[in-house]
Figure (cartoon, rainbow, N blue to C red):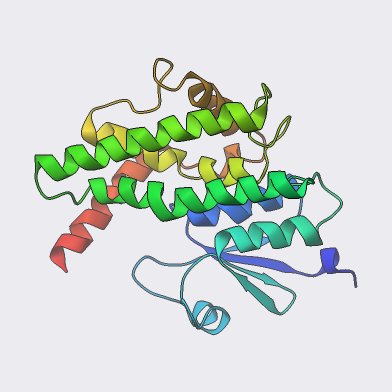
Length: 229
């Protein structure tokens, strides 16, 4: 049995942007997989066995081999399922640039967005919103430099950095609704605004992109659960 023919399972949860990454990658490769939904607030035995270090989703199980961490899974899927279009850039420098911006999003930008909901006072909230806006301005510039006039960071089709950034769009909309301010718009970030529309309409993305209202309801549940704890 070839690598691409082995049974694929993905442990995850629908609201998680990090789980969305491997789902999009598998869709790009037209790879069939079983999605095993984890329950909020509990960890299945399979998850604890498959990712004993971090005990976090997503985890891809390919045959009997677990692969952890969202962007590592995306790279694994790209290499193993070689029949579909490539996800990572073929050029080594372009790959390093895509990985740099993906790390920036995970280490700096997304944590700032996540922190807005729990901001203590107006000053902290304003500072985080400003940080988020500055990050979007950086990504707007990166988009123009990397895409070179094409619709995606990856060129003509969804690529590695599109997946790394695009998975956060649902939660960005929830944040915009929460603060009553449009952060991704045609005036400030015209390139990203158009890119976001094109990304969300892509066949590999559309089936796994959560509806904003559904995410908002989930966010309320999450905040209530955090408050009660």
